[in-house]
Length: 119
Image (cartoon, rainbow, N blue to C red; front, side):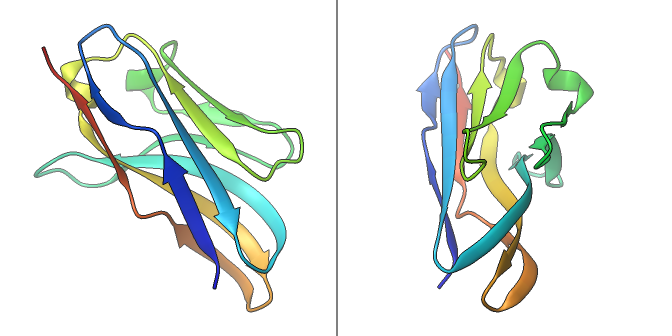
């Protein structure tokens, strides 16, 4: 069974930092774009940042200059370094990966990890 396993998250004060990580497991043949989404209470899920297999990255405007998405050298894991966190960054963060597995090519989601920015 293919899964995306997330780690990190938690409670942090405004201005603080957190790091999220996501690693796929299972019968994975290829990994294409890996992304982080977030969903705040009462809001739609939104794309935070994405990293393509070729190294290109993109960010939503509200996190530019504060968040950094990166993939390891083997391109199999993705991390999100979050700095200068704000209360409005509070949300459940989800890892997302476009992957080819033994069952074909699909988009997979992690279980989500809570990030709370509060004093």
